[in-house]
Length: 103
Image (cartoon, rainbow, N blue to C red):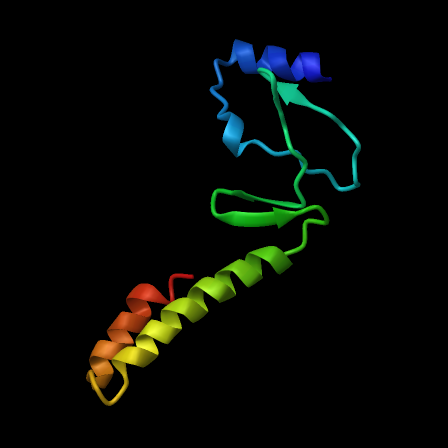
């Protein structure tokens, strides 16, 4: 299978970055894959086009990642609402729509 994969990579002139590769499967595998002398590490989760996948293909890592990013930005929004800054409600709402809601 690895020979087929390597031939497809060469045939389609795919460029692979060694540091961004990982191996993930539904079941735990004991494989030692190498590419250009670098061992490809096994991982429990990976990110593809902004979506985090895990071995069982559940949404848990992805929702945790989005929740953590939104909570960090929400903390910044709470600082804007404090007594020191006292932004208007419209400014806070626009900030929410621009920075937190896209997640």
